[in-house]
Image 1 (cartoon, one colour):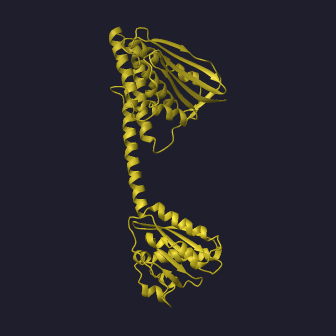
Image 2 (cartoon, helix red, strand yellow):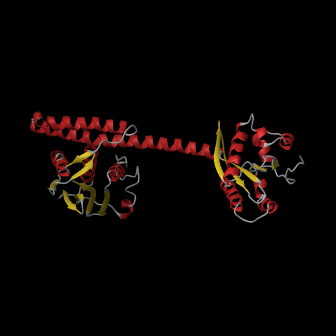
Image 3 (cartoon, rainbow, N blue to C red):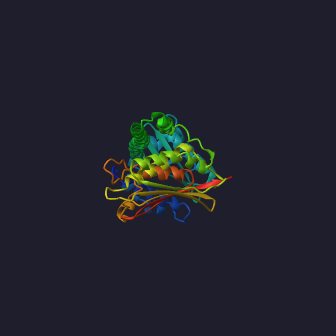
Length: 375
């Protein structure tokens, strides 16, 4: 067979942009639906050769008509073989060529462009096979995506390590709340010399700590178990803890719970985590100069949603801080982890609810949690 190897060869550039490769192959694909002649199309897309993109042209009988240097280097096939062998013959001991052959045959049968990925060891190529009905020719363009795959794997590893960091910070933050409650109740027990009175609450918080650890350990294994529960009962179960926390920090505690027969579909432990996080944030928001410290928790039913507001008259936040509040690890507290608010927001949103923070500097903060109600 006459050597139809492209006359002008330009050595492939190994630092080519992946986006340029995709652009060129997309142009070649679009030419499939045009009325361009074969030679015009090849001339139009000679940029393939300049970019060092492996390229092959065969006829409907699988005879190899044209190729470039990049194709030779990728396949380790000699020009002598290409001149005398069909694509089918070359595929006998070459999985890469066999993959190409199968895609070409499919393109000839369907008379449509075929795109698929070939992966072997660390090599990843995206093959585009474009048949032309006018002359029966088929064009094969190989896009090297190996480097992109390596980058994606590296990025995945980075994200995994970042997730581990988030989880570690989250565990530390979530355990701090029950530990603070236990510490507070032990102090109260010492002051009143009535340990039995606070025993049940302390044990409950210790069990909650264990539950938090279980939740974090199981988060990758299964979804959090949820069930229909009364939001009023959940809030009532937190009253004693909330009162004690406010008492320890000299904060006036006001509670206004709206009654409803409807229920919320939630994981009770997670919702309690959110409420206690918000309570602790509010208590910590009071500065030393705050003499009249007031924390108000108010619930209401609005448009099939159960609304919980946690409002304090603490220091409040300027707009610059408020805009950063939802970002992980952002904190203005000396001992803060910056994970509490983002975690609360995610928990509520995972339950189909909404989480909003309104704050005015030197006036106070109002956190609004909304959870959908059902029968």
